[in-house]
Length: 173
Image (cartoon, rainbow, N blue to C red):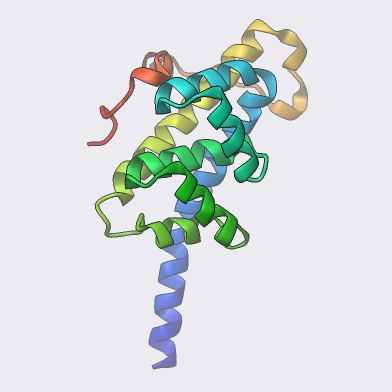
């Protein structure tokens, strides 16, 4: 019995790590872009999720003063149909356990109808934040440092990311 429980634990862990990694990559890329183009990042979030700048400031405070967390919280609210304030309450309660715990509590877990659409959008938006950051670096040489390891973006991402606020459900398939 212990062997089966241990095996199930490792299988669950193996399934959860790539998902958590995708969220971490999204948060890192969103924060990187927000660090160089905060006004554009904010504008894109306001347009995409139909929220005001004032509300965005509130969500920033409720999500640990982290722009990547705000982006994930907004996407969770959109996917789950919950109010963003409710998602922020879950964040406040469970953030020490990570976003995976928050997602499970909200109902975005493996096997749910929300799981694949959520991670597809997270992956897509993560690529977009990366593309926007690279585009910014291309225009502003002062951000080309060796530590960033700048790579020229692939052209196929530009086509998909050009209109971040117009990508509604074409990536939900």
